Length: 108
Image 1: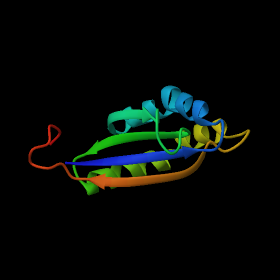
Image 2: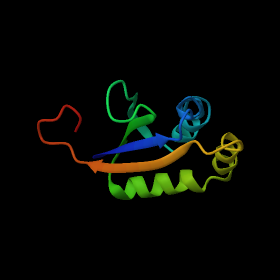
Image 3: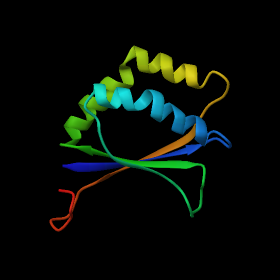
């Protein structure tokens, strides 16, 4: 099992649009493709309060590649994502990190 940490740095004033897109669009696609979330967080105190950090749980890197690529290629997702950004882009930059739990982690 691995955990992917993804950080979406939003364009100024666009964090509410990203949160709305996750609530109303993205989570349905995650469910459709079996993408399991561990949690979603906004920054209360830190270097960038226009960021969404979230964690996804995968069986393996191969599992991640198969599910993520299917999600990203879904024509309905592509259309809905474009629709949410018709006025202006939402995300300025994305970072992701893959983490392996230790043998003493509660999440293994």
